[in-house]
Length: 119
Picture 1 (cartoon, rainbow, N blue to C red):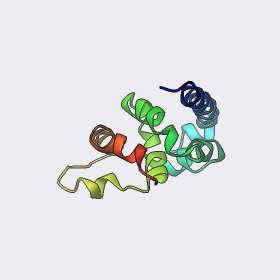
Picture 2 (cartoon, one colour):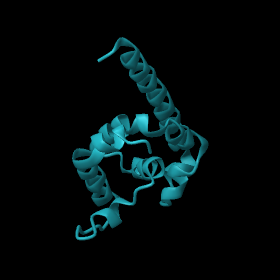
Picture 3 (spheres, rainbow, N blue to C red):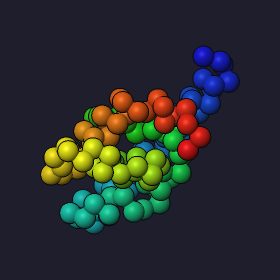
């Protein structure tokens, strides 16, 4: 890998971790912690900062989704424009954990192709 590309990825990783840390701090607010609405966790400026990083943030998002951070499913959807539930219509989806499994399947099967695409 070219040094410039590595530097860009390293910088993006740093920006992602910083944005993710701001979001984690935000969702620790008492009024968020007692909320059962997903939108309270995903419709806020720190979350928007994660999404604004674009498709270069997907490897980091997918790693966090794999760790169980299902609230990041919406960030993956907003970045890619893909509805994974529609993409895998035969798969049962009961909750966000199931959606996370579909994102990880998509990442494994199509992620590299998506990253190379002009989207």
